[in-house]
Length: 176
Figure 1 (cartoon, one colour):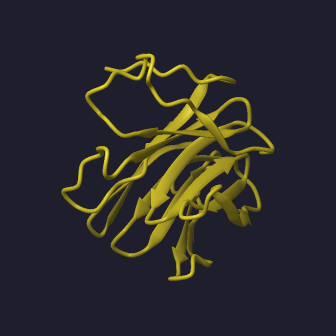
Figure 2 (tube, rainbow, N blue to C red):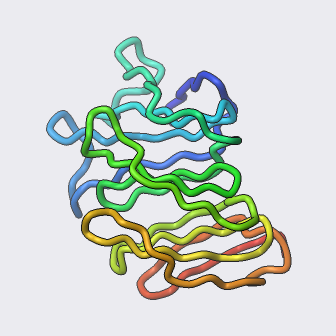
């Protein structure tokens, strides 16, 4: 296990940007690791050598990727070049192909803080679960535009705390 100290912690969310199937992080293809924190920021570091402990003197430093959120960054997901982050009832989209990583879109949900997120690379969709028990889906077009897919009101009687996609199935867990 590697220990990574994140300024402005605690950290509420963590995601690794995946590579092409079968590719492992290494000197030729570094893997960005994103952290969502209580300091209302998303921070990132590049993991280029999974064998080197993060606490070593040459470990990569965390850099600010996005800030100015309205609350804690509770959940993150990556789908292709898009980093999605959520704070309160806002879903933010960032383009990781740009340097610096650039905010490209925001979706505001009517109510319910976003607590969980899952990306589906097969259908190019992102799903979010909220504190009011709803699940929302958004499709992502080739240029990164988001369009509402569906909303399942009352998917849970309480908070949706986790989402996962496997094949054509979306799985959810909640406090109920």
